[in-house]
Image (cartoon, rainbow, N blue to C red; front, side, top):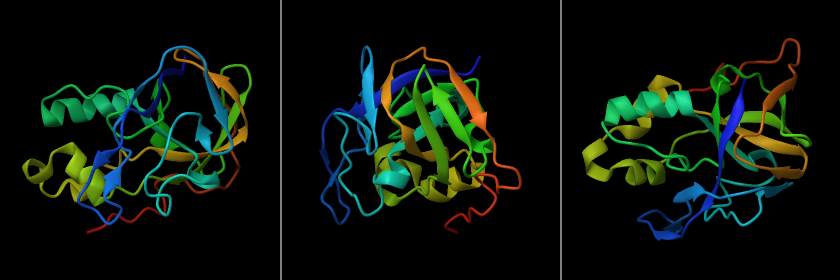
Length: 183
């Protein structure tokens, strides 16, 4: 059964060498039921709203199966929130989703797949700085990007909630179909 392993929000804003000067990538799981609204998880923030957040990027989902792949590659534990995700999933191939696909999480929340994550230099610095040179290309080449989600129906979700695909639009492109890695 596909399920939600964790709901993550920003732990703290951290200084960053990018143009904004801070990053909100440092996310960690929260306990209990968490409210989801049109702009994502309540109590979460995005430091760079030009590239993150908004209605079409309200939530970011990342699969435990993809995180496990990177744990093997990087040789370290990558807990929920490490990828800057709001939702750590299990049992659903998030990268095989179609644009416009809808998922119900728990009893009420419904989300729609909008686009893949495009990795950036802030993400590269977060993962390992100079120790992981070429991270953006490497992450892109693996095509384990995870989707951004629009919130269709808000409500509360919690770790352990079931994820059900409630709509797969016929003829829609796959999440990774039009993605071009930044090589």
